[in-house]
Image 1 (cartoon, rainbow, N blue to C red):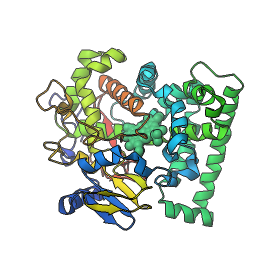
Image 2 (cartoon, helix red, strand yellow):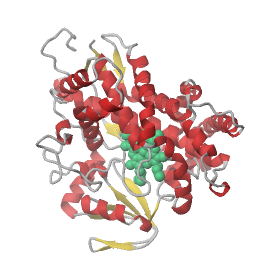
Image 3 (cartoon, helix red, strand yellow):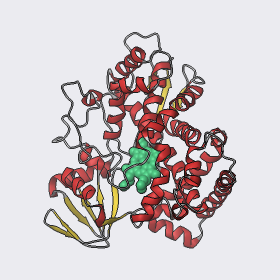
Image 4 (cartoon, rainbow, N blue to C red):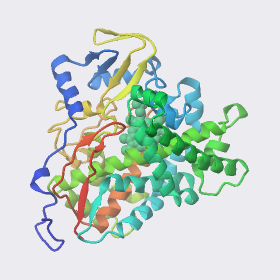
Length: 440
Ligand code: HEM
């Protein structure tokens, strides 16, 4: 039974989870393969390049790779002009217009929206209530991103966008070959996803049209940048290109950050003392207010919580690259046309890089603490590196810190008995949700 908020010696999880970091078994198999066979492992047309040296090589030699073929499974839903399936000059042209509203100085303007979104939801929780953190928080991140990037009008329609994003995500979760078959056979799932995509498109194109006609609201930062941000007519995006960026941003806002939030809550509740220390830091630095930018820079321990969640449960367990030019690495030739995968999951759990790698230890990230080590992207790569580095990294980490701060300031949670299993298809998330009990 969950303890009550009046209990002075509070434990925050059932025994089952105490001090336990969860394992994703395909990730563990890769980790074992790296131990036995070293950094290069061939599996048919896939070649795994594992460990920090391989990460350095992949990030330093982006001209060897293409993204389009590597991420083609997302094209039927998100479109064929999103950043992740664009290469070369087209990628740079599109990225220049997606980037400005996600710049870290710009992200500071979204703190209040993020905190308000969290507060409205958290205030409705009652002691004794059971809440599913995933997908519960995923909806909140979608709402906060819609409001921050596309304005209040679109945020108010969050249930419509969430419903449609959900249907589209369940299609993208299929492997590309399965997707091809579903398309050829026009299965019910395919038809319902395409119908959802068409309804979503209609809504998004109406917004694009509004902004093109000069009727942008002042809080339409992303649409304004995509529609009017180009410096010359040659660089301007077509309606289709704008639509693709908008849909991709919605999908990623929902699926990635919400999953990391659930893992951060899991880490804090399952590791004795972490929740209390994070809550004490928030109390000391922010009190009952909503955090501002100056507060965020001082929430060292809480930022460590976010980093530990990203380290132990990186959204991308592996990330693919299509090999455009043959190359050699670790004494092995890798042929053109194969697909290379590198693995944040494997790298983030290597004991030679991370002392006691499975321990959830936010204090590792405190620059003034004894455990601190500066980490390059060869060792810590939740957002990858190079030309396609996550353009939403600042937004994601800031939203996570703010949502966690508001949660810690207002509520006390308990992790009850349940089955929690990390699963992948798109990002690493709890397969059956992650339930918490509200204590007070
Ligand atoms: C904790 C949350 C997130 C994680 C772990 C994450 C992770 C990543 C990773 C690993 C990549 C690079 C993929 C590769 O090169 O293999 C990526 C790309 C991208 N991310 Fe994120 N992401 C997160 C949140 C977000 C958010 C909130 C947004 C925007 C609202 C966003 C937008 C994008 C975009 C547009 C790309 C493609 C960039 C390009 O191809 O140039 N991400 N993300």
